[in-house]
Image 1 (cartoon, rainbow, N blue to C red):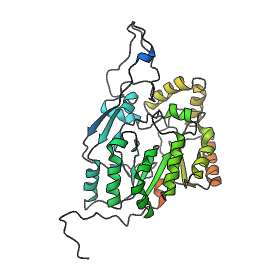
Image 2: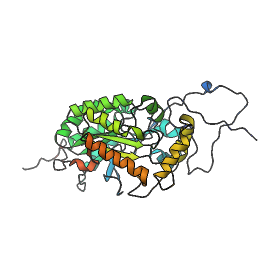
Image 3: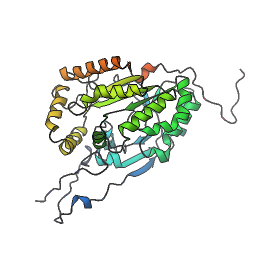
Image 4: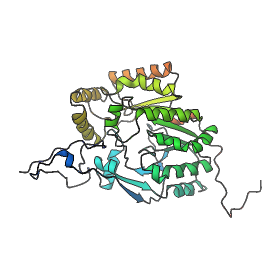
Length: 362
């Protein structure tokens, strides 16, 4: 019988393990070969980035819980490494682990801007707000060099197409030169996720995301440029960061956020195991208490998949969080809103003429 090597936290990474995806017939396990090397000798996990060429770029959905029907995700996987990320299970569809693979095996859509422009030029296209970064963060670290998100924004701007952005990265301020003119015509807003104000907790929960202070500074710069800001208090984790809810909303309001939203922690599929492992490694003294509170908000389970309840939870504890959120919004003059309530303008949408196109008579 072989001795299995227990998974250990890795510097700069969120997940503890890298279990095979739920679709794989074989599982991988690390075994002790007898050398007894210290953990410091473990090689760092390198990030591998691969280009892909999808045939389409706009993803569509009909979920009653999602306030938009179309979105664009420039990247698959996310180097921010947020342990709670609901997108992690999607990596299993490609034979990869929702664990460490999700944050180290990344894919970018090289032709995203060209595909988007082609979609907009179809006579059948009907303009409605597009959410940028609905699944993974469009401003994760590799965006700094690849610039796929900026290329997409350039297309959206040229076509006067409304866009909502969700991110937890201060890199979004790089594109103020595009977003500010769009915002003047009610064509853009930015939602910034702020999970905690405690730097140490943020580093463990979201190891490669900008610090809370950097995100607040980004909100301030965007607001100063006239770009509407939603602060996303997400996810709220009972027993871990829910005590910060009021402080998060207050801090965001002070730097110019005009609206707010919150989401309760979701633990679908593999995220249950990944989050439980994370608690055992980073909050062992509170792990069982946190899981108990989560179950109180999820009808005795760790997750609810029902529409209408999966985003906010059920039960007395979940209702208490909702009440606190509403009161904090009122106190800080923050609108309780969702992206579709920003009253985007679609009247300005117009494909710009290309070289050689026949000009209109009027």
